[in-house]
Length: 91
Image 1 (tube, one colour):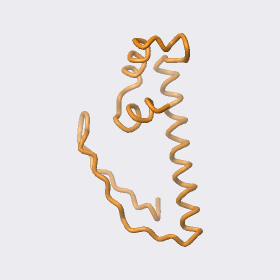
Image 2: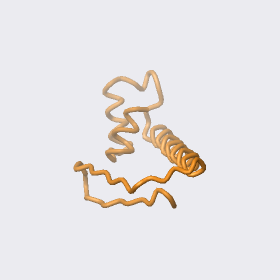
Image 3: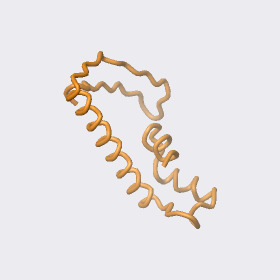
Image 4: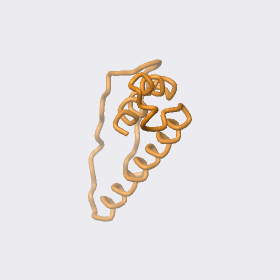
């Protein structure tokens, strides 16, 4: 899960590359490492992360917490650079 989160979701490494890497580590004998299996697990992982963030946000709003806008910077990008902004209070 940590590998899929770090490299798949955060760094944008494709499922084909992750599958090839897992094959070289001889993991297919332990877990499903096909691109389809990895894609499914990443979709579930992403949905769970979003649901968790939404729950935490709702809990904070219900408790009356008001937060300042927080900016984050990540200088690493692969094929193209993107600017992503999210208004946490409205989602």
